Image 1 (cartoon, rainbow, N blue to C red):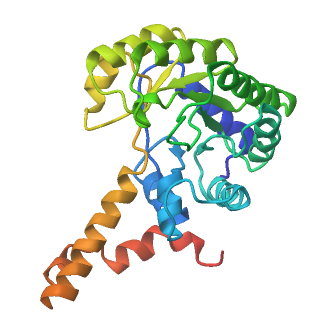
Image 2: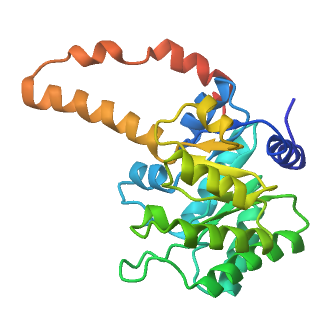
Length: 274
């Protein structure tokens, strides 16, 4: 039985109410369906994974391509999909709002907006503008009448500006501006994670795992765990190691570790006519 967009959105919001869940990041329809088959209750896109699959670096994919990507994943997956929507593909709050409305139309259950600029000289948007951008995303979602979970990301630890006090200040302001979930990718110590969880409370916190197991992060109060581009990097790593073995050594031993064609055909069998 197919699941409606409204049902997926309701399911996704309910996942944030209690406990801790893993939100893995597929980079195409095939990887999304594979993750769904393993029992994950929700998925999230990855800007880097998508970009690499297109032969581009992270943050080099155009808005129209991202929207098409979101639509393809939401239509294929029977579980909620959260969108890595980068900086909203706009600087001004008005532009963020316009683009968020278009993203909502793809059927996503959640969406994240980050405060990084892509400019190494000034890696974060000014505080006031960053807050306005989150508020604009919130207003766009509400005006669309969509129960989409808004995650606000503060990227200081990810872009070479690891200031915990500033990160907490931004996350608290983002929560007041209407974010449903808070996220500071790059934090790693128990002290940092606990500080973010306390500052965001009672709103849930997403953590990008840097190797910490689910139980450890759950004990710190983390509600949602994502992997970013790690699964894509894992796939690329094995692909490159195998290809290098063939190209440089003329050997094929690593092919023995490949997934079986019959297994993959079975996994995707019900999409034969799509």
